[in-house]
Length: 256
Image (tube, rainbow, N blue to C red; front, side):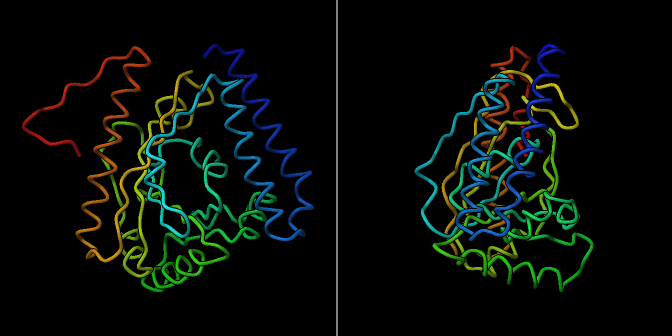
């Protein structure tokens, strides 16, 4: 992306986000369905802005793997893109996110009003107990929510070694819920800590769901294998799309 186009994209993106939160703030006092509709509209508008001003298209695969009603979503996390785009992709998204985000004016107010789940990442056993209770509550709010975890806890660069945290396994067992793994390659096109996008097609792939009932360790291993295998494939696909070299893997060593 050229510098002028990058500047235009960022001006449109941040200005639209600010105006949306400012003029959308009266919805904080509205019934929850109205507020949810407004936020979902923003998520779809964000994807459109990325397409028109940033040259980022979106391809969604495996929609048939996403069951209706309450479900845990365990997604790869590579960029800022998915944190906003997911607002428009799900019926009633509930993010498990770091508690510090809820302190940001306007942004934090929407987090609290929409009953996302702020997580104190420095806590101990009591934090996990509260997390499981919060996940169970939000899964069954209304007609059922999609509780979204980023199991690595923070953004990881495409191709970087995985660093999954065990909290997702504890929530899965405690909530007795179906979990849908999600792979993506957004970090190739919107790199971390970068304001300059690489035009192309972001792929989000819903993988076969993991039904409730597995032991924690078995679930954790299956989840990581599922997400990493698919994300490695999408990573290589994205590199070819960008015309960049695909790294050669040691065939004697399985992908992470």
